[in-house]
Amino acid sequence: MQCLNVDLGDRSYPIYIGSGLFDSSDLLVSHMKGRQVCIVTDDTVAPLYLGNLERVLQGFKVTKVILPTGEAFKNWATLQQIFDALLNDRHDRRTTLIALGGGVIGDMTGFAAACYQRGVDFIQIPTTLLSQVDSSVGGKTGINHPAGKNMIGAFYQPQAVLIDTDSLKTLPEREISAGLAEIIKYGFIRDAQFLAWLESNMPALRALDSQLITEAIQRSCAIKAEVVAADEREGGVRAILNLGHTFGHAIETHQGYGNWLHGEAVGAGMVMALDLSARMGWISSEDLARGTSVVASAGLPVMPPENMSQTDFRRLMAVDKKVLDGQLRLVLLRALGDATVTTDFDADALSGCLAMSPA
Image (cartoon, rainbow, N blue to C red; front, side):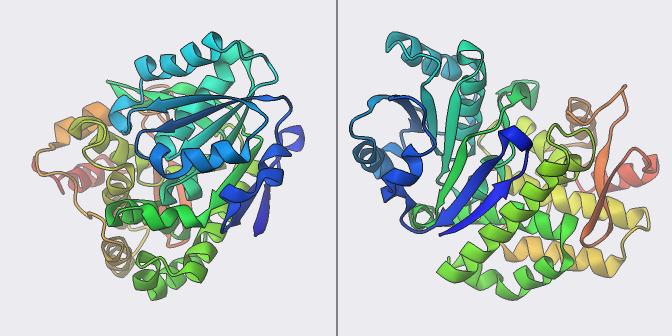
């Protein structure tokens, strides 16, 4: 087992990465204050791992909340099911919520924990590659709105993150590719050497080589922990973690939540961000081609949906958390491994980028 730390003063917490962590009762229990626990999962993950987690928590008063699977259910109505269960079983302020699942479960459980009795503890046990390297770390929680993804939520840090790499064995290939999108992102924004390593090892990563995928998860979490420690509430540098996300969230909202996986939309969105960076003269055409090739090699789309127009993009990108005072801010690259957040992009260049989709 490897352990990283997210350094946030009195809100600091560990990220445990290893095989067989689902069976480590001492590790989990050490981060729980009371004897009440509420496990939130979905109907895909529950048959795989819920029983095992219940055995680990013998002796605790356990409430189970099994939600429907998918981004389409990341909304107020589904969130209410968590509150209903907590209130019906009379959970107090020493309770711990456990998010057992992918990014949707992690985001909703964290948001419920932030709200219930004005804040109770929660622990992330992410079971998808994407949630292990991204959404489980950093304290972003929330739900979607029909007008925009993740527009309602809170910054709320977990007590710990337990990443059991064994859970990746049950994922379909499409989910592995979606997770690789966020891993590639870290190379684009922060670590050119890591990007080169990913290029060399992509076939083995897609095949879930145990040693290599663990190394990729560790490096991704280390980069995110470093960025979050420097800027917990995204007032500055943390926004670089959103490379491709402004375009990607627009794709997800337009297509209907869940029809494009988050990682798939981010994959296409990152290529669009690289394309705009190249149009601005910030990166070379060779860098653009190389970046596009890396995304494609992970089994991800490199073009936006054919049925999405420039007008669609502009309308949906206007509803983005990085918009300030009516100005759209985008994460672009000055070089592979060097990202910046800027409003200083040419309008014609953006139009050309959006013309990757039909006008």
